[in-house]
Length: 260
Image (cartoon, rainbow, N blue to C red; front, side, top):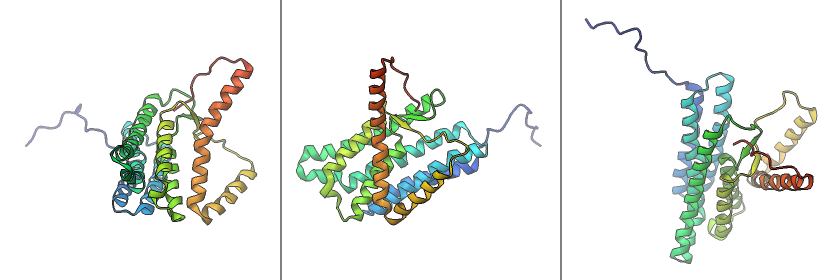
């Protein structure tokens, strides 16, 4: 008969199932996007990235609502985000458009996959900066473009072009510029609204706005999502310029940077 286990020996803590299950759904969607892009199924790949964004938006909120936050969940979510919003979009846009740059020569062929790698690396750096600075600054703003928003804008572009029968090769240079711009915005100090802080009560007018906004999205999702994505991407630099012009006109010293 074995000796009884000492009372001070504790089993390692478990993990919370529901939020981590949602994170796993996001990770699976990102992996599926990569597989679909390799097989040339670009619309399916884009859809999978948007599904990953849906899961990513739910896991944190579910964890807060059910009081099941954990350090394990934070790290797992970051690794999932790197696959779903860093590696997957980069491979999708590379397979769809940037790989075609090889037609112009060896240098441009290398440029295509290097820009795709830069996008992935910037997403990783953005996530690492978010983890190290979280909880120390204004939650109303992100510092730099969030990786899900960058992935959404890039995938909306691919989806919109596919819906209008533009093959990736015909817009490869625009895809290159867009991918590079989104990569640099992710690691920039440009502020973006985080939409994490909402008032408990809003005027009835805003409910009407949401209902009206659903109509064009349902009518043609690719073009509307692309428009929304590009407007949000442009809002950061516009806010950055407006803040500096206002400070210069008022003679106010430089403010500390916004949150991650």
